[in-house]
Amino acid sequence: MSTHARPLAEWLSAASDEQLASLFTARRVRPDAGWQDFFDAAEALLDPGSLARILPALTHDEATALVAAAAEPAVETTPQRRTLESLALLRPDGAPFPPVIAALTDRDAPTPLDVARPQAASEADTAHAAERAFTTVASLADLLLLAREKPFALLAGGNVSAGEKRLLGESGVAAESVDALIGIAVDSGLVAPDGRRLRTTTRAEDWLRSSVADRWSTLVTGFRDALPRGVRTDDGGWLPTTVWSQAHPWDPTWAERGEALLERARLLGLITDDGSEPAWAASLRQGGSIESAPLTDLLPSEVDRIFLQNDLSAISPGPLAPALDVRLRTIAARESAAQASTYRFTPESIAHALVAGESEESILEFLESLSLTGIPQPLRYLVSQTSQRHGLVRVSTDSETGRTRIESSDPHLIEAMAVDQGLRPLALTKHVAALSTRVGRDTVYWALTDARYPATLVAEDGTAITGERNPVVEAAPENTADYAPLIAALRSHQGPDADAAWLDRELEAAVRAKAVLRVSVGMPDGSTRELILEATGLGGGRLRGRDRAADVERTLPVSSIRAATVIAQ
Image (cartoon, rainbow, N blue to C red; front, side):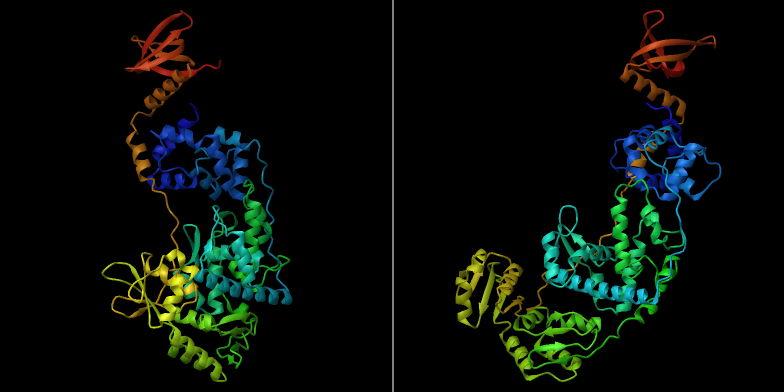
């Protein structure tokens, strides 16, 4: 039992429910903590383990203020002092609690920050930063399109696996930038974990079809809103990036986290390679609104037309407008990405578009509107042939048996699927010129599609439906712990007589520790007598202990005890 826990317990009991919930959230208290009363809460909050978790979260200014208060209690009320009090690190008189002072003994005082205005970037560096931001936006679009087709596998720690990074590198996304790009996407709500998979969100669908300016603005907004407290400023901006490394001086993991944030800022064009600042980043740092025009003015103009070639390729003479690029890439595979990109039409790419809900008419209409040279005959023929073949295999659910049924007007396809070794896990069986299986309809459909059979999902009424292999998810809001039951339990044990409650706890702790107490006892005549007792038991409103001076066992009514102090042994 620590005597300094009592003033904190009294402060906790006087605090509002909102203040307690905020404190418990900041101190990462478990909602199911087994605290009986505010004395338990105070002791737990001043426990060395709890302090070791909160001190690394302090910002540079808060850590500096705490060290200063330990040397000389603060008199002036500052934002940092109010924060430290709300975190139960400072007493109302401005002095840290003794356990807090003890926890500071092995921590160095933060060095002063040099928050000088960042150097303005040169014209060449500014242009380079704009180009990098453009590349980042394009790379992130590639990453989202890949995740939409096949969600990324996540490791136990939440990171993308090395195998996924290798595949992304083969798809044109720089492997060394994958972690930073995913971090930017998570901050912007474009991807979200779903179990052990990272999936795109509904917001990503809108983002993919937005202009480059809107795409960049969304990413910067997400980056700014997700910045940690240590680098944020009260006006909604951030500290100069030159001092980010000192933002959380007592956090051993901050060096790595800070470097990751700087890399994201660099990829978004908010800082240059030498740490200088482009013009559009200066207003953001100072809490201003996002102005994308200074950046987009340095980027190549988007185009909305392409050249379709007889060799089943397409050439975009400049960056294709995002909405057009996204749709074209459901019909054709992109072969190269640059200001002038090339695309390739194949039977597989056309079939992919048909699976995604396109039709022969919609594909040709889209290409007609996009092409500067019309649609070459070989491409028109490819679209027509692939469309005619698509749907030869129909996958449905038999209403009578509930089994999945595979039908086709081409008996050779039925025979081929029946003996296809790659489809053995489906356990297909012949049934009246068709195939049947207990495996679910959607699973069968995608297995046939992966095996390059022209499969189509069919509803019970015979109409074709579009399969959705990897549905998007909603970015889950950050879970907020519900401390209402815990606070209510603490309030229920909050009595009017704090002195009596504190004395009971002191006596209970002394009995458990078999401590020697100096006890002040009120006598019937109004006088006070001091006894030295070795506490042995407590119950029925009485304290039992051996009187060391008289060497006898005494039993004292707790109501008569005025004070009890543990004697150091």
